[in-house]
Length: 142
Image (cartoon, rainbow, N blue to C red):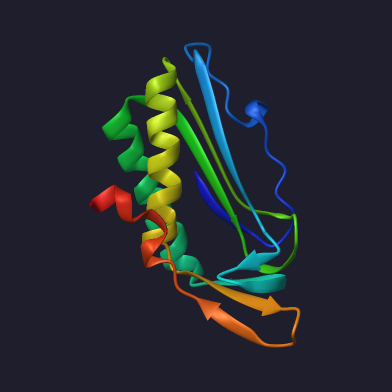
């Protein structure tokens, strides 16, 4: 299940349960205080909800087909976020660890490339700017 959230993300292995699972892998993306030489004060995320949810679900389904996982979840924040907050969370369970690791990496990389979520950085100098992320997962396709 893919979802957007305008509140803090709190997820754990309990969100994914299956007695056949032998592995759980998760990823948390945090708001950091810098990017490309600029000091970041906060972030804002906007999304095209209908398309974001549809594409996010498609990515999770692809991961299930490609990597033989049992289940996966991805939650992406929208709205205004402060330094240190969780911006995106991915969790995967599988029978074996290799599939869980590969699927988790695939999901976050594809979400960054394909899901219509836009990030605006607010800098400490008072400036701000929208950030593009086509290069964030270039290794996936190259």
